[in-house]
Image (cartoon, rainbow, N blue to C red):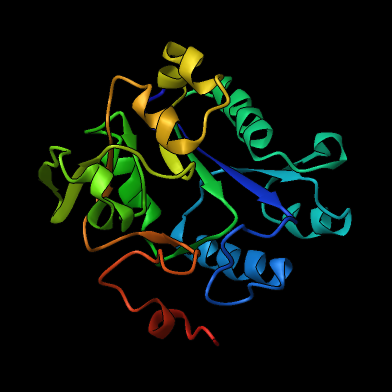
Length: 226
């Protein structure tokens, strides 16, 4: 395996989030474009595979300009666990470092390089300082730790969303967990290693109302219209 090899899998659906974001909550396409434009500013020249899961045919013409497109119907009805499992199957055959991205993540510019650096130290990393770790009582007894890497403070966590990075080798080694069709919290707890994320300096935020990553004025950065 070439240590420097890096790939990104970007998963998109036309279905709206169960918890709409602070902007474009009623227009999934505008949300997708907003987040994807920020993603393009966050990455460098890593190859991207786009999985379009239950999307209108015309969406392919947009994403084919930016990478490889896989159109997946999913039986005509979007099933998030089936979609995630399909993503993991694509990642399983890849080598090196792999970042898997959901379509409702807003990114800070020039930050994905920090994801790759984090994988030099940890088995799994997320770009998202998940606010529920500070708010929900179920995490009050978790043993959080901090580590400074290249002037970025990282913290471990019990779980995160399905936007995260690892390696193809790690996915194959723990394929039973990756192939089990579990939601994110159960999925991460089934693995022997914890996921790490930047603290107070998120590289990206999940665009879900009430769950934006803390300490960053996302509206000011991107001029979001509410």
